[in-house]
Length: 172
Image 1: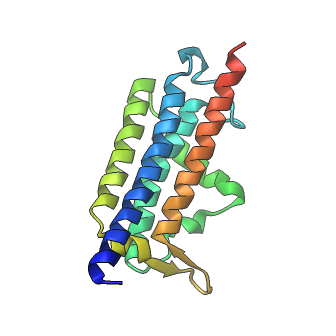
Image 2: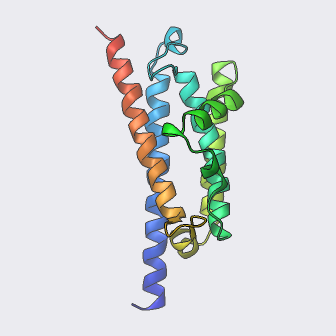
């Protein structure tokens, strides 16, 4: 393919990736804003409330930004050193670090952290963002920035479904 066609295809793939991230986040925020204020602290996802989920999202925005920076530099993302069963300890730390009051401030922080992540990603040339990869230390497995971000979008769509299901339990 001509270089201009490859570049256009890469740019379209990058735009689709970022649009998927933004749409997944919008689904969660729309669902959360439909929740009655009295239910914002109610556990619905294991021990997590909607406020905990939002803090988790803000934390992963920062984590994913750093992870993409690591991958672009050829380093395996540093957050993997904290992996445990379903990221429980890491997620708990993110919630402690990013959960703030009042709810409106938390919501604004989550929207801001996502805008910051998307703005950072938009500034990376499409070809670089889509092909950057890093090998796991001592292993054969590699991780791409593209697969990391696609996994985040899938995770956020799953969380949107969980919030929606919780909302449905509140409506008789």
